Amino acid sequence: MGNRVIYLDHAATTYVKPEVFETMKPYFCEQFGNASSIYTLGRESKKAVEEAREKVARALGAQAREIYFTGSGSEADNWAIKGIASANKKKGNHIITSAIEHPAIMNSCKYLESEGFEVTYLPVDSDGVVSLEDLKKAVKDTTILISIMFANNEIGTIQHIKEIGAFAREKGIYFHTDAVQAIGNVAIDVEKMNIDLLSLSSHKFYGPKGVGALYVRKGVKISSFIHGGAQERGKRASTENLPGIIGLGKAIELAVENMDSYNTKLLDLREKTIEGLMAKVPYIRLNGHRTNRLPGNVNISFQYIEGESLLLMLDMIGVCGSSGSACSSGSLDPSHVLMAIGLPHEIAHGSLRLTFGEENTQEDVDFLLEEIPKIVSKLRDMSPLYEAIKNKK
Amino acid sequence: MYSEKVMDHFSNPRNVGEIEDANGVGQVGNAKCGDIMKMYLKIEDNIIVDAKFKTFGCGAAVATSSMATELVKGKTVEEAMKITNKAVAEALDGLPPAKMHCSNLAEEAIAAALEDYRRKNGQAPDESVDCNGCCNSCYHSHGREEDFDDED
Image (cartoon, rainbow over all chains, first blue to last red; front, side, top):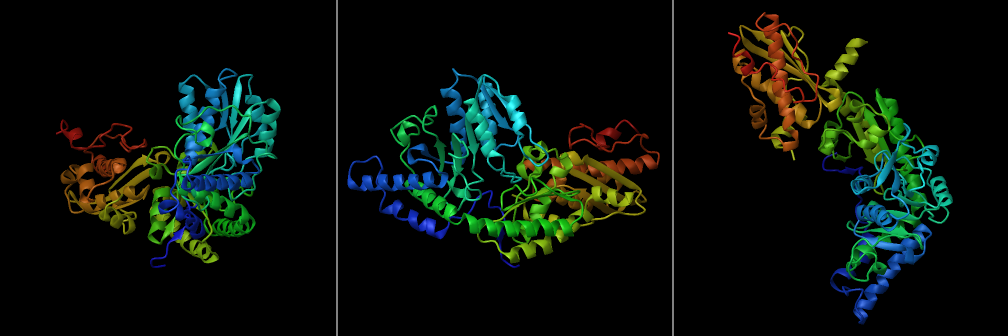
């Protein structure tokens, strides 16, 4: 224990891998040229940006010209939704998405509703899975875009992306997926999966913050997002974030290279944690699909206790986690994802998300399995809800 | 975001538990909103001689419960009724703005327990004022001073 920190919030962000940082370093003070400049210093920057673009394209099975760098995953999501809506509004004004999307998608759709677009928010089942049947029924003549996230950030559930993509392609409707949580965890091939647009964010796979990318399949009609210079094929003006883009390129290259061993390791930690907690702690439930979930994602609701208290107690023993409780979000309602899978408020308030990553070990899991049951007991002993249950028995 | 005092009362809450022969018990809040506070008071000769609590809620809810029990102990019923949410928050060196409703819950829990005591002693109407809504949702003052003004 002592000062040891066990970081279990990799879905929130990851550290930058030293080898990624190393590749970024020269682009701050020495190789700082503007990629649009004609002289050698600028041309070298341009070359480095294009190399990074190649790496992102390779990771997705795309062509380099289909990759557009952005300032974040949220920006890529905003661009995909608003850019498709604005460029295709003559064709129709209907968008289909799901009830468990990231706020970047959710609130972009809400914005479009205020601008006269119509949005269908598909429900999910108790595992958090979107049904293909529901999707088929929701399609209209006016549908111009389907946006379904690849894997959920809170409960880790992975969607049937390939099938959704095939259906969208057949109908001639653009298909976007927010793959921010999936990159480096799930093998992605935009061609085989019939994906037209895909968002990603560097800091979820050991790259730097402040840089992301949007894949836009060649031929897809999308409006420019930032108007200005000719950067990113004139679609997204701004002087390139050189070190960020270089870092993203290196990070995604490593993520794809190491995916198999990374997944095997995370899966083992995840399963031991889920199995261990299920066996040791009564009155709990796993949120999200039991098997078809991100390899490092554990999301468990502990009945009769509240998530923020749990997080604070975990923090005292050096464990960093997250919760979908209202108190940890600053609003009065618990997470919309936990609501969408049908959890009652009081159970959603007691949720804990732990997301494993590169530096976690078996010892971390042993520590969790030792400490979490103690913390849960302590909080339950304090809870009038638990008292009521005990008295009933 | 929390003061040291809040963290102290959260990690080492004072007076957790139940009082078997409590003569004033009040519960406020709602599981749906994520916090419930149950307060037990033992009152002898109009003086609160013991106070305990059980709370389901966030760090601030636990800390305010703990502080509220500390504040009421040794006070007369009338003095305890005057304890405001502000006093509870101040005793904890303040709460983040988003958590101020937790201090309301503490004030309401004290009031509900005192109301229960007064009811049992025929000093208050025979209707429950335990609050089952989200904190502050009922606009009920739960037996605070102003409620009793016209009683005497």
